[in-house]
Image 1 (cartoon, one colour):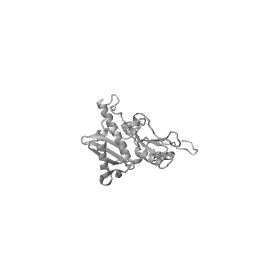
Image 2 (spheres, rainbow, N blue to C red; image 1 turned 180 degrees about the vertical axis):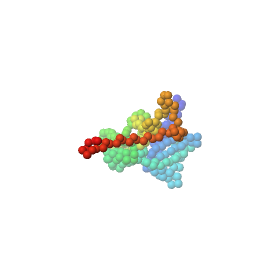
Image 3 (cartoon, rainbow, N blue to C red; image 1 turned 135 degrees about the vertical axis):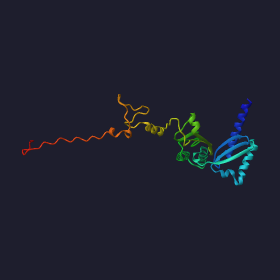
Image 4 (cartoon, rainbow, N blue to C red; image 1 turned 30 degrees about the horizontal axis):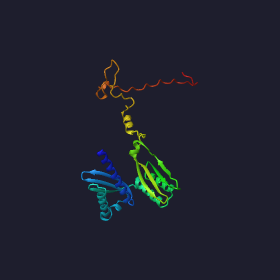
Length: 261
């Protein structure tokens, strides 16, 4: 039970840290967080769309964030590394935050959802799904889904190829939840089979030429006759001379009346 309690406590602490960093780096475009324990301390890798806003002038902002992580969340010697996301349109966290910001600014949820799906698919994703739930048009809660391309809901393909991001839009009627799922552009599904052309080319080269003996079988000679020597070793009298074609028989002479003599 002691080990289980430590595991639960550690996971709760990581979730609280992630929520805090998401809130602090919302304007910079939070794209993901990875926490690893090392012999030197705790390494925190933060992915953002605009890392300069997180680092701050001369590293002042990231120093303050490191002190909060160490004192408030009790991580040993935290080292925060900020990386830039080169393709933010394929990051579900960034796209979910942009969609939430658009809804808060007054965009209609259908227009914002279709626009987000179009941007994701134009970036090269194999499939995406956007789920918007909350008080969208009235006092009753409802859920709207926008999808395009390949979507996996369960199994190993979902765990390997689907990335998920969450965000929250705060409006006067209430809170609207947003969930974005994206399938990687280089995802290879189990039902996709590729045939290698190299195997066919090798098989074509291995086929013998027409008229040549099959590989692995010696060329047979007629029974009772010794094998003939090659042409270069034959004697002049053994070389067969080409036979002259026989002259056709002379045609019969025709007489004056046109008949043969």
